[in-house]
Image 1 (tube, rainbow, N blue to C red):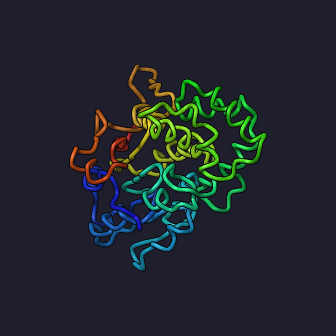
Image 2 (image 1 turned 90 degrees about the horizontal axis):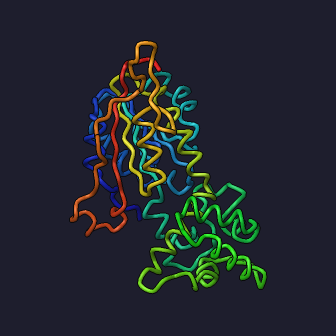
Length: 301
């Protein structure tokens, strides 16, 4: 079962919904955000993206709703195809849904025995098992260092190599056993989560795909339209922050001949919105969430 989205009310408020507007939910999942958006639309339309075949089963039978079974890296092309217009709002709830975490065979969770899969698109050729069994040590170490932010990334990669030399690492338990010597007492779950996160990001090209999405948003939004993004780790949040600040991945604001700043957005949230203690108590997944909101301005960049 899909759970309620994190920071749902704050996300919907951030969109500042026009009942007759056009909106895009690029991470449909269980439809929590989409359902809340549709409740506020009267004559408007919502386009929702998700590459997970399981998410397609949750699509609504509503004439105001169009489900697009695609990776959100292709948002601009499909919005132009289906809507033929700029939109009033885009929302992205990044990371892995509770449903995906709680489905053992998807291999996302450290809590369950399952194949090392981690693919958000089951048609993808490469899964986590392919990576841990075929990448060389330097490549694995880079993944764990950059995407998992682990200081002992090289040592972890070497132990994985030693374990797979004995037999292939096919399951989540195989991987946990291979890295057990690097799990400090009291912090086992945290380090495992970092290792799994790093592999998941690599499997799904998450940072590359997110950057591709963010490059498109300013072109898809009409002036006054809102971009709402929920991120769950510092790499995502930094990229979102930079794009909302400057319109580019580096966060470097360009200026025109007269020294005026050229940025496609006006920041609505100067600092990220984070969940309340009550929400975190109800849903532990909310703990790392950060919500940022920006509004498309009318400055040509």
